[in-house]
Image (cartoon, rainbow, N blue to C red; front, side, top):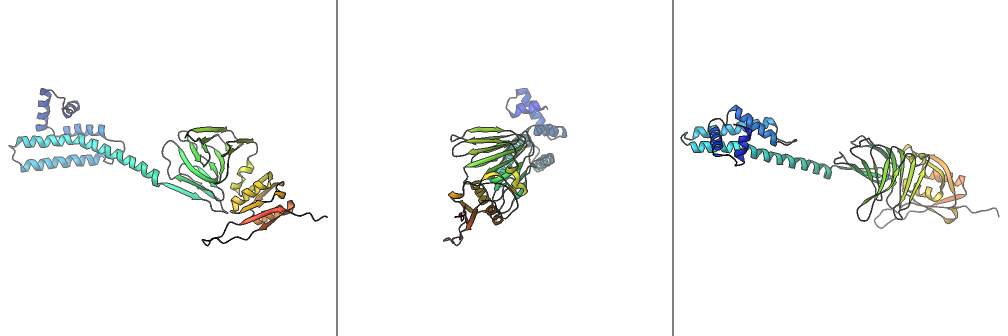
Length: 353
């Protein structure tokens, strides 16, 4: 008996002579060791790569079937040749059927594992107001989260990309993997890299998304209303890109990027920064609303703060420039909670006259 002849029989392609050879084999040799090896070889041709049924279980299954056939033969009258022949035919034909069945079981099991990983294996890390967080991902990448920021990502990356969702600000040290680009998704843009170091700031409610490249290369992309992905820019080292979600305007700056990434080391760096921009950043960091009066909007600051509390920063601003601040009383809301703290900054009155 050959594997080719057995396949022809199973596919109903035997000639009369070949059919008699197969039937004779069923009757005399089908359950011998050599025949078992033949069917075992056919089994390997069907078996999936990650089949839950291994070779040992297959041998146990084969021996179990053979044992059942022997029991049947002992109980039946040996003159019932047709019953004996049919039992052996059923046993031999069962193996390809089982092989196909096991293949689909294995394939289905593999799909279920992937679906399970994609659907329930999602993690979310939040850096509370007033603190930062550092997260190491399964691929070896490290993410620093700024105050009030969060990321959502799978415990194990599957598919062709490594995708995470960012709300807030994050500093990314990406493990190099040319086969799997690392994609940071925000509400306005996507930032794609292979292995590099960059910073993304995309707080909810803000119209601007800022990306700063420290090392390597990244591509900043946006999704259009029709679902297409378009490139905003290909960034180079020491570039800072500011993208306005509402207008589509792109502002590219090149030079010292320390002031954009110093937050991860507990520092705030301002270089000729308008007071309104400082107020926005302090408001995000300390979860307050800072309102700058019109008569104080022309002030700018060049200063570095290292883990300073909010009110100490405000006090230093009043020393450096003729401004003052007022802390407004928080209002109790209907649900028992209190409104966000409001701080107003205005110019000091000139008392020289």
